[in-house]
Structures are given as C-alpha cells and as structure tokens.
Amino acid sequence: MHDRVEAALEKVRPVLQADGGNVELVEVTDKGIAIVRLQGACKGCPMSQKTLKNVIQRTLLKLIPELEGVESVD
Image (cartoon, rainbow, N blue to C red; front, side):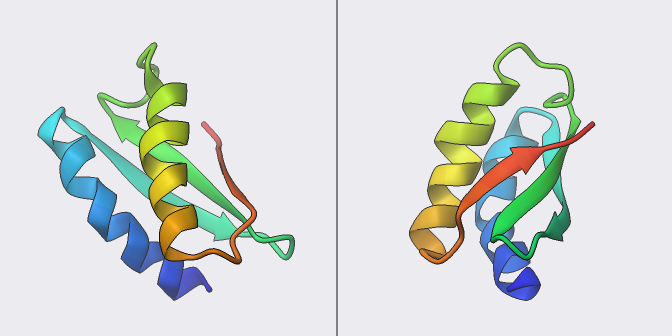
C-alpha cells in the first residue's frame, strides 16, 4: 500500500508546490493510516490542517478507498 499512497501523493504535490509547500510520506500503519510530514510553506502554516483534510486526505481516500485516514507529524 505504501507505493499506492506515494503515487497518490504525486497527484497532490503540484497543488502544494505551487504555494511553496510539499508533503512527505513517513509510513502507512498496519491500521491503514497514512502518516505524512508537511514541508516547506505548509509546515507551520495556519491552514495546514485544512490542507491536510481537504486536499491530501480527500484525494488519498478517493484513490485508495481501503485507506482509513491521514495524519501528520512534525
């Protein structure tokens, strides 16, 4: 599943990179949670949690329905 999540993240990266940010896949847990790290302008941005839920999580769950969710770490 790691490779599928990484491929799905490639679809959202251009949106993040357009604003100077990025996202790194840290791991996919046994419970189906994708752990990501926001980078660049996304790290510490007041809108980062909305970006995580409305852009990253929505895209990943649409492309990988068996994924349970997305969480971020610093």
